[in-house]
Image (tube, rainbow, N blue to C red; front, side, top):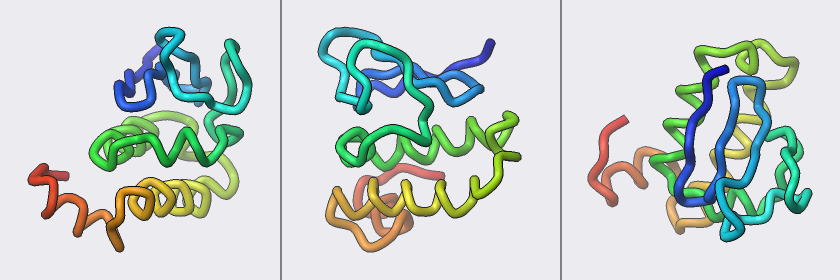
Length: 103
């Protein structure tokens, strides 16, 4: 099974969308100590994620069945907005320019 590590939130996310902590220092997903589906993660988890990692996460999902889930695009857009706004940016392009990374 494929997965992606997200260091900013201390989590491992599988291609099925299951989020598990990589250590006891991981950001709370909303369900302590167990895997939780990414669509059920609390806003605190998303707010702690770095913008560049969120882009990598959604690129990862674009190659999985998560991409086909009903309402995926609305959910992904809403979550990216939480990530971006929590860092003080108006959109992902502004974040990219300010932080100096490429999409």
